[in-house]
Length: 259
Image (cartoon, one colour):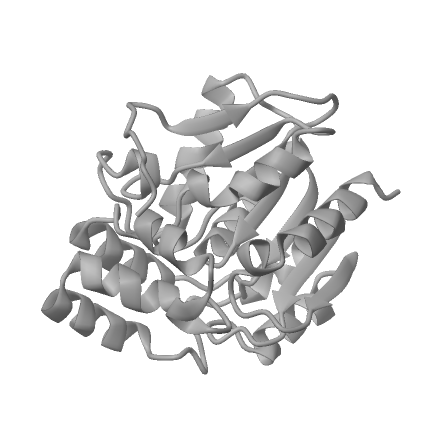
């Protein structure tokens, strides 16, 4: 497990580079520390803001949120508190659902959008197990075992992946209450009918072996968001940014700097 000192903060903020910052929103049972390779690479040219959602990572002490729109409102409020108004936005997995909500309510302040390993519906068709099954198993097995088990599915080689141990260590900071609230948030959300309203230039990024979000969900995003580009990274599951960070970082950098 990685050493991690919990602080009474809501955002990990790296201020290097010029221009609009890029805001990174992690997914279910994630945390800001999972973006270490992205912060190291991208902060050479951009400001990078890596968020810890309430109940997760460094903010596991905060009251949990059980609605996607609630996470969206919380992030926007925190960005305003930090006097951050114009920004690029990346959301991974559940974080991808959250940023879709953010686009609806903070459209004028968001420049480019990156939807990474995510979809337009919270009830994930074809997921390695249903959300209902995940809730039952979480209550039976406890938070720590659930964090290890589910995080292993994010990698092509499961727990044998070199990056899994650190990722599972971050996931273990999620309480059972936060895990159940996050699952409820996803199961009660759908943004499919709003996809055609997204006018931001959008990158849809996906690992071709993702077990959580299957191709039909990615295709739905790609076909319905008007100004969208698709990047499929081969030989990766749900955690492309950890399995192939160099390719991931170059893809993000190229997209942000493109016309």
